[in-house]
Image 1 (cartoon, rainbow, N blue to C red):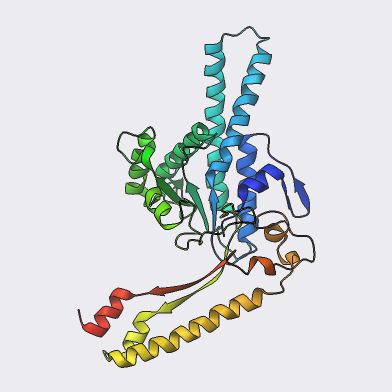
Image 2: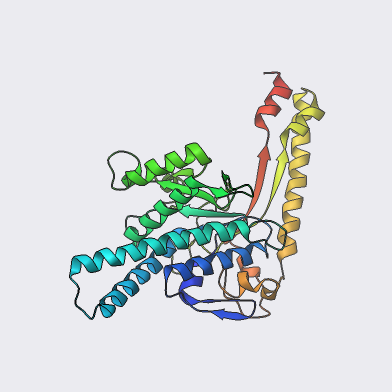
Length: 338
């Protein structure tokens, strides 16, 4: 799913029966975000994605808080240049600590299924974002810390598996003289050493998704465009009901190069896939919001009341259901020998 982290941070949420109000600083926002990620991961099967741009607002809150504090401490006897310098020094320290919190929490927290949360951080610098400056600082720091890596039990820096990073290439950062090219150069350096981030073309996404740029769910699955009753596109707070993957090489092994047999088997397998997918869909029907409050009652996907069913989110394109396939190369080799 694409969790609605903006709504949860701005309007508060509830975890373990405790109210968590909107954070007043960047560091606290990072801590709350990782707690939400762990809670969501413990209550669902697949991966989740989080758009980092929702943190920009909280970095600015920290900036304003530090500026006010330094001004008050000095009794107002401080020039603007010194005030700005001291504020930014404290802000950089806060930024580093907050991003470190995200990286360490995600890698050390255990979900109820006994592993780190399967989470993707979406790094997208949007031109019309009122917190673009702050978000550029956050994305840069995330890439710097990923480039460095995390120490293993022997004290050697290694590449953490999570969070996955997806970096968006747009006009202002595609190495053609754009304002944020320096962040892309850092991203490429990071990919060369750490295999992350993955890259998405904003231009191509707008072509394919009615002008929208949004995160994949985990690493592969994308939602289809959907509009609410006011005609506004909505991606965060939406999800995939489940995926079934078709094993193509297995059909190739059984068909032994006989194409007629292959197409017959493929049709049979696809019927089975459809049945399995509908089995997932039907199993979710009638489920009440109480089954996972963090998802259905406290904002990750919805804010339903206790005892309400989730059915309206299973219909009319709000959520998706996926059919995947694997092994085209191996299938071709098995069927055609090339």
